[in-house]
Length: 245
Image (tube, rainbow, N blue to C red; front, side):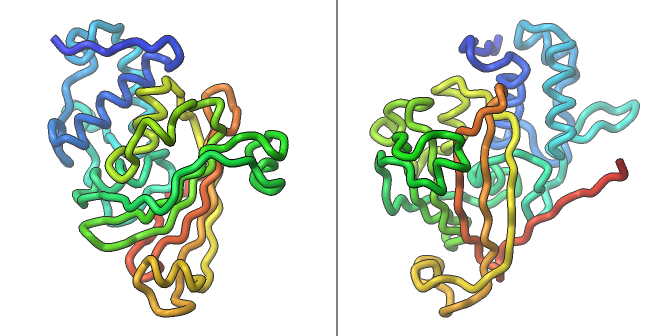
């Protein structure tokens, strides 16, 4: 019987969500296929149906699962763009839509927070941050240049202990540090690539890129990560669903 290791820091329904997402990533649950029922998952994982229901509802709201009346819950077919309503990492996003993700680490270090980054993370300037800069790659094509700034005290040893050319940062934060990643605020703008971005991404100078900033919050509504990214404008799109309120 499959079991979930309780961390004490992450709510159980979040751990079930992670379990289901990993099942999608490793091919256990394929796009368009039905996942086990709430009853089956509750029995398999040794938890209540209410907890499983909460986890599945969250993944439905994120667009990863879809309910079909009278038939069950199915893995959503993934479009060739990023669903902005879903809080997924680049690695998770690429795997869910059938691409092979990889990363090239350009730098990984711990350094004091400058004034502007400290403001986004709601910490004092000079607070120690884990700073990770990577080229994000899909099917051997550079897709984005990404720089993540994380509050080092929330994930001690992050830079030294893990190889982020292979690891998913969000998986490590969730599973190794027990951090409940709740929501993010994201801003996207179009601009021309800088010289360094063009070089790293294989673009012509000043080619269009999608400049993205993101502040990631934990379940207690505290900022954890501030990310600055430049995505190729010729290969990457973002998709958002707007609903009447």
